[in-house]
Image (cartoon, rainbow over all chains, first blue to last red; front, side, top):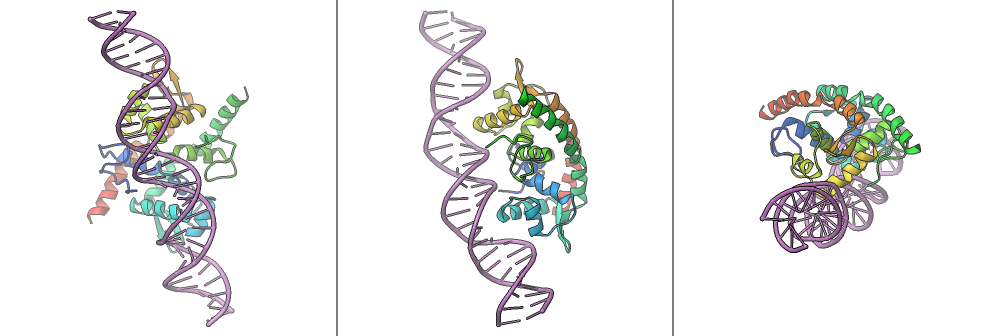
Length: 113
Length: 113
DNA sequence: CATCTCGCTACAAATAGTGTAGCATAGTTT
DNA sequence: AAACTATGCTACACTATTTGTAGCGAGATG
């Protein structure tokens, strides 16, 4: 799967708008999960695999390649970690954690009615 | 693909944490794109298909089912639209639009070096 | 050298997504 | 009323992506 480079055509948009590249990237299986799990700090490949519980190494590797190419993640001595930009991104997304709890309550309530 | 109901096991987590269900949902092909495109206001099925440029009706329909089940989208006279909760969610995500422009610049700069 | 751990690849099977055609229903026009 | 239109959505064969297991090659340790 081609890397969704901002400025070029991506899945879902011919316009090449940056947000579309970003949505394409984040919409790929596990991309958000990997970023989310890197919040806790750097991790080796195998440790990251475990944080993600059920990710296959094949997929983990391809997602990491994409995330590296797009400067959200890089690899240092300590393992994979978020870049400056990755940190900025997760800062935006972080509120989802709290919101999801409130959302869960509503969804489960609706189920029980 | 099973609907990632918060509270039950989902892709990437046995714990059933709400955030994991949410990340699973948002991480599915086109889920973010659909939500993003509904920002502009309600749309009929076919109109939504066009906003998303290249989504197949099959997939659009399954994503919509999931989003409806999880109360982020519903269908009214005017077509599909974000629910109260869908609006809350997009409010969190909205800053990605601006951030992506800044990100694009950095990524493209790095390419040209 | 034997044994670990590491990042990562191979590859076949399973699953998910695409694209085109078109059905069924409802409303409009002639 | 027959013909035309537009809608939401399904069928289905094809293609692409993901999974899961096994294991390689490199480096560290004893």
